[in-house]
Length: 256
Image 1 (cartoon, rainbow, N blue to C red):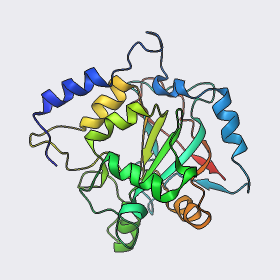
Image 2: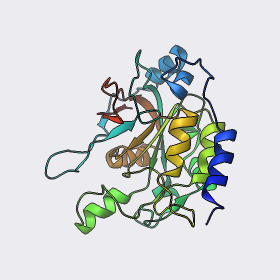
Image 3: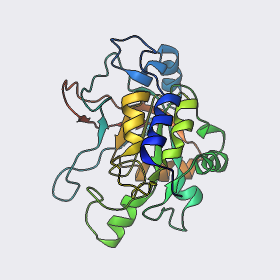
């Protein structure tokens, strides 16, 4: 898929998905405002087995060159007080639902809204996406990289990821945040004929106020979800409170 002229598409997206001022001019949480006490209490009730999963990648020599992280809103500050990054996590294992026999998407695969809907349908009711959810998208790229011995899946290069056209879904569902197992979350190369840097980031972070997570390790969690058919869980993923940073490392913990 090739989209129209870059600036035209960006202008349309800014107008359609703008949340600036929605929660007041001094707001620093953006869509994390969708997570309230009732949502956190419900998320805690999802813990049945007490099984925990760290979703952080290793940062030593055998791991990656950059940490599992949240990108800050506007790429200028990372603040999430009062447990805002705690809530109902839901895994959308797109790799298993629409990928190859290994449960992996090829590099350059653009995940469209229809793929997200197909994944929810394939996984069942526990993966229904609700207001205030913390949505995790698995592509399977890190598993392929490890299997082929190609080194850590970080840095530049082609990768599967969210299409720019999923901005409408991300906005309409009123999710609190979205994270993926790839370095940039959105598809690379991008879907524009003209050069552009991270078009989805430019709208989702700065104008929608949607925190984006990158380089999350979803393999063990995905295997467990596939085994028991339960794709919802308590997710605790508060970043370090680093003011003035473009992002902050996090060790997300999913509890089922």
